Length: 66
Image 1 (tube, rainbow, N blue to C red):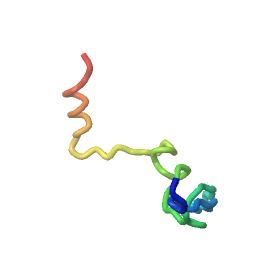
Image 2 (spheres, helix red, strand yellow):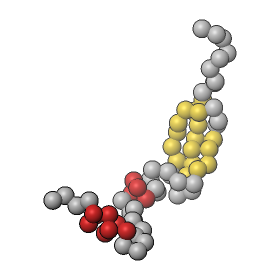
Image 3 (tube, rainbow, N blue to C red):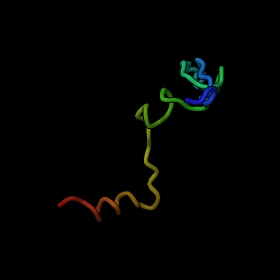
Image 4 (cartoon, rainbow, N blue to C red):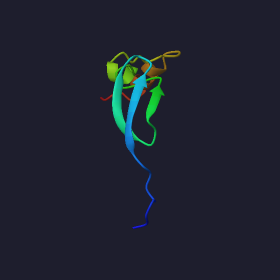
């Protein structure tokens, strides 16, 4: 194997805007992120479907299981 080919990984402290902190392996020492798994709507269950002009109902009616 070639020497000095792979990056040097260190423990990185990640701080989210919501206040959640956790550690990962990265080339950086610290990271600031806007959204994480604790505050993302998909993971928290607060995800909403924005229905414009009844498109979801049209799709469900067209492809409904019979």
